[in-house]
Image (cartoon, rainbow over all chains, first blue to last red; front, side):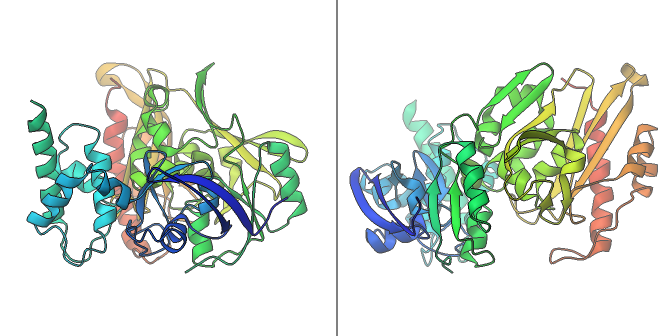
Amino acid sequence: MSDLALDISLTVNGERVSERVEARKSLVDFLREDLALTGSHVGCEHGVCGACTMRVNGEIVRGCLMLAVQCDGATVETIEGISDSGEVADLQAAFEQRNALQCGYCTPGMIAAAQDLLKRGDVPSRDAIREHLSGNYCRCTGYHAIVDAVEAVAQARAGGKK
Amino acid sequence: MKPAPFAYKKVRSLAEAVALLGENKDARLLAGGHSLIATLNMRLSAPSLLIDINGIAGLDGISHKAGTVEIGALTRHAAAERSDAVAKHAPLLARALPHIGHATIRNRGTLGGSIAFADPAAELPACLLALDGEVDATGPKGKRTIKAADFFKGLFETALGPQDVLTAIRVPAASKDTRVGFAELARRHGDYAIVGLAASARADGKGNNSRLADVRLAYFGVGSTAVRAKKAEAALASGNVDAAVAALDLEPQDDVQATGAVKKHLAGVLLRRVAMQLLEARS
């Protein structure tokens, strides 16, 4: 009826994947250890730091608070997929230009969370950017440069539409 | 850390979930998992089996009928936050929901899970208490309804039995006389509150003579459950905010975030903010 390990099939960054996983394995550990997708980072492992932020079925989630077995049939997009598609190229460039990263550990999660906000299409206020990134810890930058980068990209994308 | 090994079973019906809970005394239900999986990762909890209820049809969704808003237990916080029915008919929940965790948490966490977990610093149990709401639960003897006042028993302890599954919450739909207020203080947006207050009342009278009746003040983060401040409710109904603050009948304990004395002071600060919201005319 139930088991300690189960077979799952899911789509990861556009590719079909079928694997047998331990029930206790988190989604982020599955991606990192079984699929070698190490862009999603593991920080606190209890849903506080946001380093494992990724998309499941189009919505951002914490990869440490979902089990891999819960993703049977799901569509998962990690920072590798989100960046390879070019979707966040402008965010990546802005983070680099504005020194919005130092050690870079939080950056994949920051980019995923920022893109979730920006893909809504409007130019959010600095307060709204801070609120949306409140679930992502950065221990280097003090956040100011990150907010600058996200704001600049929001304005550039809005300008590009005119 | 990594969780201790456990088995996993995705169920398709309530009956299956209730039966499995009966067969496995230390099984846990998995809904959003945003409290449960964190405790598993920290090995504060080591169940032998997780029963995933996310595949049970009909346990999510929001409906408004006969003066009541009913929200299925599996409804995600983000779905309720986007819901027109919640915004219009359950304005206290609409005010509280953005304070729950962060975007990633609200995308997965469920309303039923938050109520069933009964964290004393969580927003939704206090809202349910302030609104005099109720929950539906299904167990081996069938379905029953439990009033909010009878549901929260103690620290992480509720009226749910070991084989019960919480299936829905219900709150009275707001009328034009309904007034609600919500405020919380947290070090970082989305963290559990140091102190928070969910409130409801009924406007009694019109215009400048408007007064409040049926005031319900439900504090969170100040005890082992969400608690009502009944003496302050009575004082606020008589129109005196200073007297309501002075009458605050709370005895918060020290915790990692603040001393009891600081929490008591902050409870008064929140009461003044929420009183202003309650006295605003509803648009």
